[in-house]
Length: 494
Picture 1 (cartoon, one colour):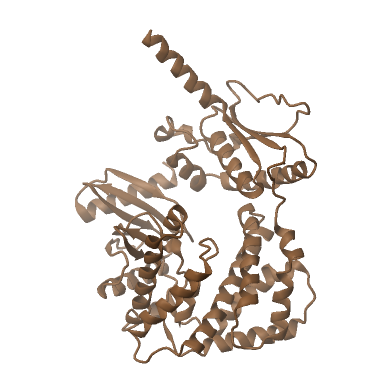
Picture 2 (cartoon, rainbow, N blue to C red):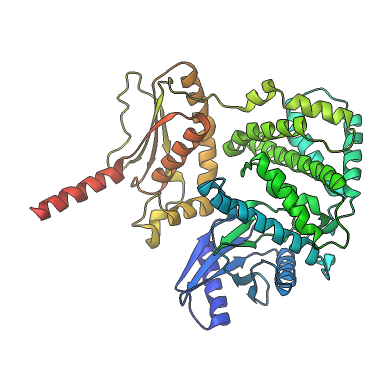
């Protein structure tokens, strides 16, 4: 029995203890952070969420916060059952569709705007109402998001992004500016509960009602921080009109809960400061994951983050003079810096077609490149644990969610593909520059069903997103299998 199966067995036993019923199905939910593992339990026409986490302190914090907020009727999932060891707990299932998913699917509609309004209204209640009687000694890390935490985010940006650019600046003056900014932002009259990671992916929508998850990193802090986190989330890419209108909507909602009305001038000035902190924190994360760990997805995101920062520093003010910091911020958003991180993009006249195949080494072998130059890449996926060894995956392919979850969570496929991207990207960019018309990339595994199919699908998506290049994707064994079935059906018909 592998680790995941063992965890599922434990969860099944815990669920039986809680309900006296056996689960009909326990479904993996992709990890979102840390070492927590989430599962959706289906039983008797209902669903529940089980969390498995060996970090007892983190579990204690989340459970305490959940019970506190649920008692105040705030929009968090109720914790229904906890094991004595506190390594597994079962929660109410508040759905699977995040506000970010809905935004990406439906765009800037009135329906989505109202969901953002509802989120901000409930955020104000969680921050201000939820602050009452909350024991901050239960916080996972610091009790308060103060000067040290802000300095930490600024230094994260400095070490993992700014210093990689090797631009000249006065380090001591920069540190003085960091100190001044962090002091300015901590001098706020509006300190209550701070979610810390209030983003649209942590807002689930069920029956048109929002619910908040992953708030275990919360602490006391400025109201503005969470609002900045939601409205300036890079992946959400909210329109400026939405950002402004939603900010004022939030202020109006908060005013109804605070003993004294907000001083909007000061509040918005400090809000802009927290927006800047979030933008820089994101660049630090992209720098660490992309420039140091060489993860392709994060490298692609750097230009977008820089353009967000460029717009911000050209249009917003944070109410404090930081000469060296402002000078270097303007320097890093210059076009020549941004273009360093932007991949060459194909256009309508680019002749290159990238032909991506999945194949079986046992059946038809490595596909032949029929182009005039031949060549290309062949990647052997057989070093990755094969889902086909397990009964529940044998009839599925690498395009189906259970297999995708298996490969992403239980194998080294993500690391394998990251290295593939690093090699393939060099060729694609070069071929675009030189007006080549063909590049073949092949992924092989034993049966051409699971690992190679998944790798081919993900590589096609990566190259399309990064370079906008034309893709011809073919799953050789899967297409051959379909043809055989069709042929067999035709014989039966006749």
